[in-house]
Image (cartoon, rainbow, N blue to C red; front, side, top):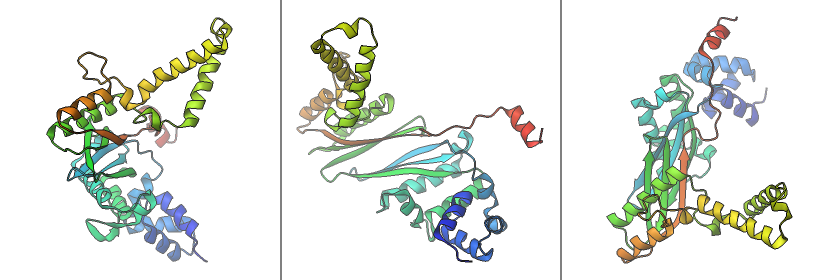
Length: 311
């Protein structure tokens, strides 16, 4: 029977095996999915297949900076925090971030299919599948990003041993220890306070309209506030929006180390820039948190034992 791309994709998703391995397995089994899985298991893919349905929501975020101007950040997931602390797993994540630093690809599918830097005879996906078999847990290269600044600097910050990672890219005519330290402080701020945008200019108009809609609904549901004149209500909406902007926009946030407790991040960077004869302009930041948005599987141990015993 003819082997289709969708069949290869399905088997790959079920097993975590490489694309060519899946195609070969389907050819050997004449398109029978169960037989193809059995073929992969018999050829050393057993652990990858066994673990394919598990949730990988732990793991590590790691960053790599090259020459102050180029950086990459990756999140690689595991099922347990125990494996995230394993030296073999950490070494693999280190290799993945180096791969991301040198890749020309921007989407995950192309990244996973490219030659593995440590062995050109394998793909990144092949290396991942082999690591699954060695470690015995489902692992997943979840995401990566790469940043280059030709007229500035990129700094990284890793918090909690790899739980949160941040890259900050800024334009600056001067790149010295003081400027890099200031941007590292800003990266720490992003890790702690989870800014969503660099500045108000970056806030999506649709997001703003939606937030205004919500605030208006809150006002109209309040017996006292709803009776105020339209002009006053509009002022209340803008007041609350501005307060929200100071929470989600990095440059508007109060700098966490501000001595007066009032200085904004923008003012802090302006101050450091003046002291070093330059202007520091944050152009972009990336914040990865391990397992962010993923469901974590928490099962009662006794219930799991009972389930395995068929009770």
